[in-house]
Image (cartoon, rainbow, N blue to C red; front, side, top):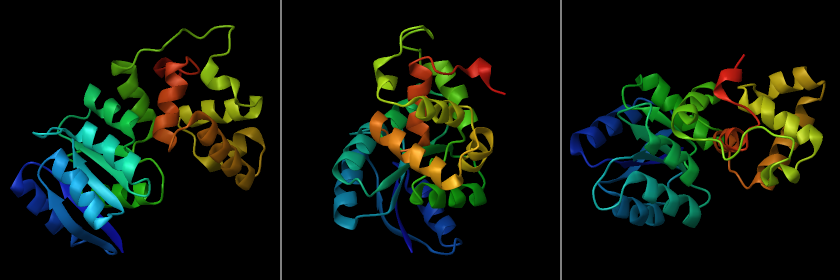
Length: 221
């Protein structure tokens, strides 16, 4: 059973989300919170597997609450929700540690699947969509250059290649086909580069790849 905490400042929205989760097998709404401070407190009390986090709330916003939760409760995943699918707060939430984001007008099936995806430890934001976001709101720290950025210096040549392919939207299986590596080797490479970059998932890895100039939105294939 995936335990979910519902965080939104609107009671009706929380009620709707609770009703929605009741339709999904293996999902349970274990509690609710109406602002960021309450979300942090309730997360400590309930230890949910996934927090559905509204980004715009009084007292403490969803970005600040996300950072607190993922820092203090590393096993808890945060899936950010937003009325707008292109805004700087979304990127801020991903930087803060959210495992992904979905607009509030997604279908019930997409929301339930998003919860399951982040619970598995994956990102619920498609890398191609994420690149569209950061292309709008994130500026590379430096242009692609002859000097290897410090963030990439710890990576092997193969790990850097895998990171670039992740940022281009390839799955582990597609990366294996592209590089000729076995799927298990690709999974190990991905885990190693996540650790070296100090990122939690693909979403944060894509942001790093863009910020250091390894990829740019215009290079999507």
